[in-house]
Image (tube, rainbow, N blue to C red; front, side):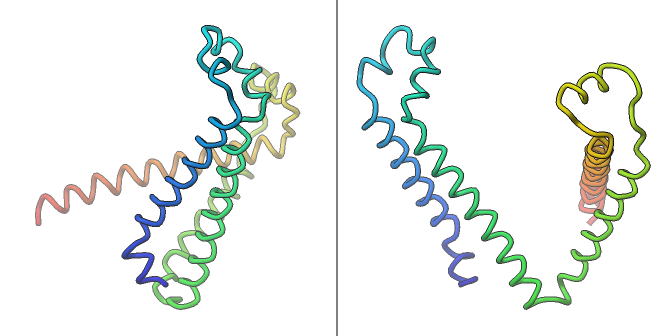
Length: 162
């Protein structure tokens, strides 16, 4: 299965995309009439057009493909972990370090007491602990960005001197 996907995986993904697009376009063309989409005020009536249900197939297929992609990613990750545990150990340690750093950032985040952030948090019913989690996630994302940029620069310098 691995050899098949490494050899033809992009072709399979491309074909699934074509089939999904064909189903979506077929649904839109089959459930709409010429005057509904080509009228001068079609852009103004976008809500009415969407309420007809012609975009339901697009949303359904997108959600199915998203679920399949997430499931396949998790299944193949677990399979790779089970078959090549020694080579996966580095990634397991890195993931554990990221999770640890996230909790450190989350627990060291301070809760805002005033300003527009507090008003926005109240408007969207964001609790203090959830706000700290969001802050921790933003900080860990920034850290990963910095690490990626630094590693990219270091690798370019190393490749320059090879």
